[in-house]
Amino acid sequence: MMEMAGLTLHGLATVTSHRLRSRGALLHSCRATGILQSSLRPFAGFSPCQANPLCSATGLQAAGRSHRPCRLEQATRCQVQVRAASGNGASSHDSGHYDYDLFTIGAGSGGVRASRFAASNYGAKVAICELPFARVSSDKLGGAGGTCVLRGCVPKKLMVIGGEFSDSFRDSMGFGWETLGNGQLPQVAWERFMEKKNKELERLNGVYMKLLDGAGVEYFEGRGKIIDAHTLEVDGKRFTAKNILIAVGARAWRLPIEGTELTMTSDEILDLEKLPRKLAIIGSGYIALEFASIYNNYGSDVHVFFRQELPLRGFDEECRQFMNDQYALRGLNLHPTHSPTKVAKGEDGKLTLWTKDRSGKETVTEGIDHVLMATGRKPNTRNLGLEDAGVDIEESSGAIKVDEYSRTNVPSIWAIGDVTDRIALTPVALMEGMAFAKNAFGGESGAKPDYENVASAVFSSPPLASVGLTEEGALAEYGNIDVFTSSFRPMKATIGGGEGKAFMKLIVASDSDKVIGVHMIGPDCAEIMQGMAVAVKMGVTKQQLDTVVGIHPSSAEEFVTMRSPARQLREKPEPQKTEKEPELAAVPPKPY
Image (tube, rainbow, N blue to C red; front, side, top):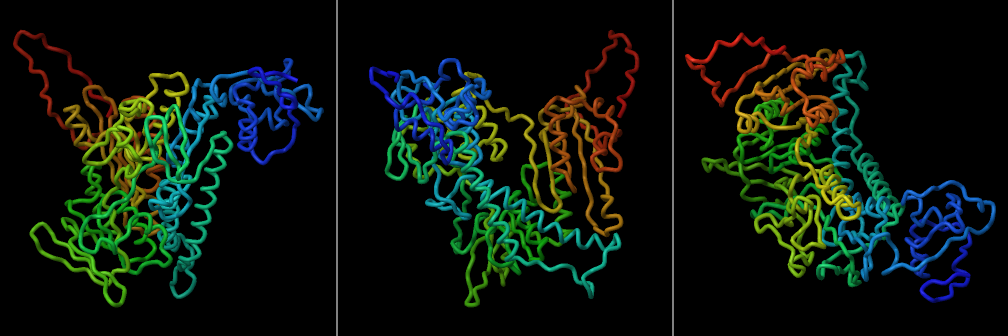
C-alpha cells in the first residue's frame, strides 16, 4: 500500500501483469486511474521487464533506463513505485495544466514524425488528429499517412514502376525474349493493378496508425481547429496543449476557367477505374510530367499544355531542353505557350479543351476522357482557425509564416511541411519535424532545418534528378564556373533498341574547385543522385571526385571520369597584372 498526494492507493501500487491490446491502451488505463507515466519507477531497485506490459508500455525503456529482465519476472505481479507529479503527470515535461505537451493537427509524414519522436524519444505527452481515411481527399476526408503516402509519392511511384514495364517488354525482344504471339506484348489489366495499389494504400494507412500507437501518441479522428494559443477543437471536443503543431500540408487547386469543375486533380488521377484512351494535362511541373509519362507508358494518348517554352520551370535550363526533346521522342504531345480557356462536356461524355497560344490563336482538342489540372498546390490553411489565434499568414499564398525554427508569431504554435510553403518535399517535412521535436522537447534550442543542397527527382520517363545549383544559379552566385557534361546511350538501349539518351552534368565553382551542382537524366538517376547528394553536402571538390575509381560498367562512373569541361564561364574578370608586379610561375592545369 502506497500514498500519493495524501490519498491511499490500495491495489494500485501493485499492478497485475496481464496482456493488454496495445501499449496505448495501457497508457490510457494508467492515466484514467491516476497512475502517471513519468511517476512510474522500478520498485525496490528492480529493473523493468520487457515481458510485463506495464514496464514495456510506460515509457521506461524509451527514457533510456535499463530494461533487463527483472527479478520478479517469474511472479505474476510487477511492482512499481508511484509518486506525486505536477500537472497531469503524463509526461516528463512540465506541461502545467494542459492536457498535452503537444497536439499535432495533421497525420502526414511530417506530423507523424514530429509526434512520434516527441513522445518516444523525449517523453512528451502527445496527441494527433487526422480526418478519416480516403484515397481522394476533401474537407472531410484524409487519413493517417497524408498526401505522400496515400495520394502522392507512394501511389505515384507504384504507377511509375508499373508503366516502365512497357519499355522492359519492348527491350526484352532485343535480348532474345519472344513475344506472346503475333508480336503482341503483354496487355494491361488496369482494374487488377488499381485493386493491388489500393490494398497497399490501406496497408500503409494501418502502418502509420501502428507507428503512432507504438510511440504512445493518442490519435483522434476528426477535423482539428485552433481556438486560441493553447486550445484546439476536434469535431466539437476541446483540448489544451502547451504546444500546437500544424502539419496539414497543401491541397491541389484548379485554374478558375470555364468548366474547371469538369477537370480533376492529382488525387483523382491516381484513382481512375478505367485506363483513359486520351488524356489532357494542364501544367508543366514535375506532377504534370510524371502523370503524363505514367499514362503515356500505359498506352494513353497524352497531351500536355503549358505556358512556358519548355517544361519543368525552375530546373536547369540545359536539362529542361534535354527533357523536352526526350519527352517528344517518347511520344508525348507537348503544347508549349498554350493556356487553357475553357473545358466542356459533350453528349457522349467526352471532354473538349480550348487553349490559346501567346499570339491568341485558339486550339481545340476533342475526344478527351479526362483533363488533369496539374497547376500547383496551395497550403491547406482554410478553416483552421488561424486568424482567431492570431497566427500570421502570407496573403498571396496562404502559407503560415514561420521563423527558421518553424515557430509562428504565436510562440506556442508551430508549423512544418507544405503548409509553410518552403520546400514542398516529403523528406523536407520529415527534417522539419525532427528539428521541431529536438527544439521543443529535446533541449536543443538551436535545432533548425537545413535547406542547403536538398536533392530532388522527377519520376517521369526519362527521370531527372538534381542536387545543388542550376547552371544559371551557379553563374549568378559564383561568377566563375566550369561545366562538365556527358550524353550517351544507356547500355540497355544499345541492344534493346530504345532511342532515348542519358545526360549527366557537373557544375564546379572554378575559384574553389567545389562541386556546386549535379544533374542527371536517365535510368536510376534518383538512386545515383542520393549518393552524389552526400558528397555535395560534405563539400566535395572536383579534384576529389577525380580520385574516385568508378564502377564499370555503370552510368554512375561517368560522374568520376569527366575530365574536360564542356565550357568555362567567367563573369568575374581575372585580376590584371601591372608592370610592377613580379612574374609568377605558370600554374599547372587542374587534372581535369
